[in-house]
Length: 325
Image 1 (cartoon, rainbow, N blue to C red):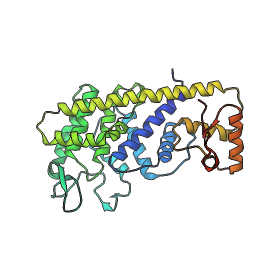
Image 2 (cartoon, rainbow, N blue to C red):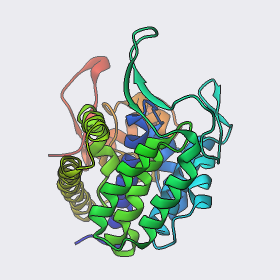
Image 3 (tube, helix red, strand yellow):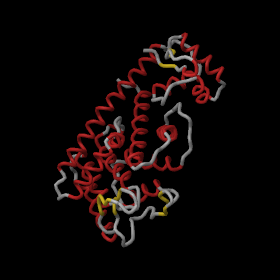
Image 4 (cartoon, rainbow, N blue to C red):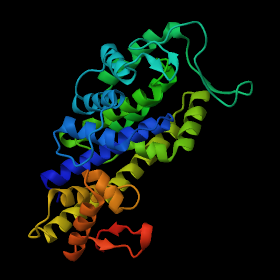
């Protein structure tokens, strides 16, 4: 039911949610417009979002697109190290210099820790740095040759990767990228309308709890697999809502296809359909379109007269505008 434009924009929304969700799991907040703009440029989609340059975001997008578009390519050390380099272009994690594009080094244990200084709780201690190269060789060989269901392989590979914890930082993000790469074998033309990382982010506490229980238990990972598949099912169910919204948007434009509007008006309406944050006001309209508030108000009133927009009913400084019901 989706035409080419609708498919492209649905894909753009899903990939934006995926990238933002995966970073938020690690406590990293990304600018929505920057992520969306970067993905749109890579996919060749004419997006109405404001272009925002961010080299860190550009690296994240490169990694995601390589994993999904080139899912049939072998997983190698060089590829994984390239992903890591793209995540940390400045060679730092926050204020700390880390080993970039190389496995972690050093004699000190790699631990996943929470809590205030002096009252830390160790959730997991990874294998020593000395065994990481051999452990990663086993994992990449399995990913390339196991030949199991992509569902099984995605769940196992993610758990396996974060258990080895081969990098100083970025293990969670790359582990989820690895799962995305294996799940992409199921997608027609590497096009996916659901976001696994965004769904994990919605269940972040449960995610860390199931990881900790599995990593501290024996080698029975059944509970982890069931949790992973349940999360995947929720992500797919949520995607159906996104597709329904896309169809509603297509129906809206079809309904008003004979109505003449200017480019500013088309731009803002598309922004509303694609997940506008907060309430639409004249000041926000003016900022998005880089025009005066008087021009913004004229645009808005024109759309209201044509039935393409409606006043929310809130007056004064609280005045804002919505799509017709």
